[in-house]
Length: 339
Image 1 (cartoon, rainbow, N blue to C red):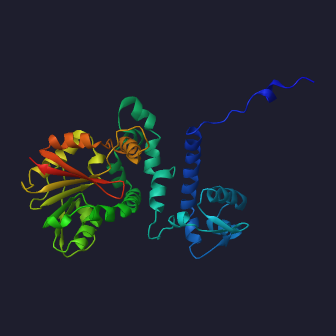
Image 2 (cartoon, rainbow, N blue to C red):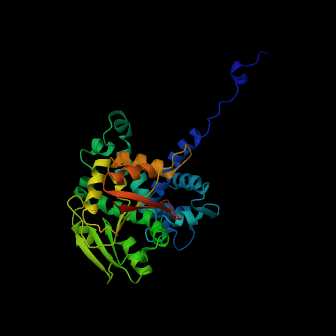
């Protein structure tokens, strides 16, 4: 009997990393659905049966099982007995009130109705024409979008706090902030980083500068003054060190230089500017900053930069890059000296 030519063909395997990229997309969507259904919250007090979870999440039990089984295979949720599920350390951080909750970040980036997910649908437009993908999808920029839809803005703020929480202590401990009697955090949000620095250095005083609605909700601290304003129009004088944490990567060079020159106009000769940013590696290997750079291109028209690019940006703004201080997080401290 003649053998089938089809049977004689070798199996075609999907090469890595293509396979991983495709499966990672599926995994991301599955995690977003689990977070949206609040499954981890229902499991906070202990294991529950599939039937109970389906009832509480108002889902189809067999389909929910297939979702949870797939997530279990990557360490998110666990079966303590057949069709009895519990949290794992990974799924536990999907709870709303977990100390290290990442729920907001997951929903912001991976839910199909979220602003980041919607922005990324326009990636092809941005690559083709150089415009900001989000703006082309939504017809406005991300900041206008969040003002128009306050619930989206609230989720964004929660997500940024979740992502930045682990970085705050790393930034505080990586540098001798105590040498500066006064530290100003420009666009410092609710003051998490600045309060951390003040708590570690009782001799320091702080100035928190951000939009009026932001500083109105700032963390309380008796050595921190709150100053409302717009860093494109000016920044407060009188500080010995000026912090810009994860700010310049939101902006293209022209806008970044405007912000830096406003700092330069008020900083003392002995003062220091400290940019707290991810620094792009120059080699071909994986670097989280390369993907954050793509996200900045999509969402805001900003960019991540190499240390050489930061040095050039500082030079155009009246500063010299004095040193780059790594931290135990993805962020580094780029210290600028006024010239």
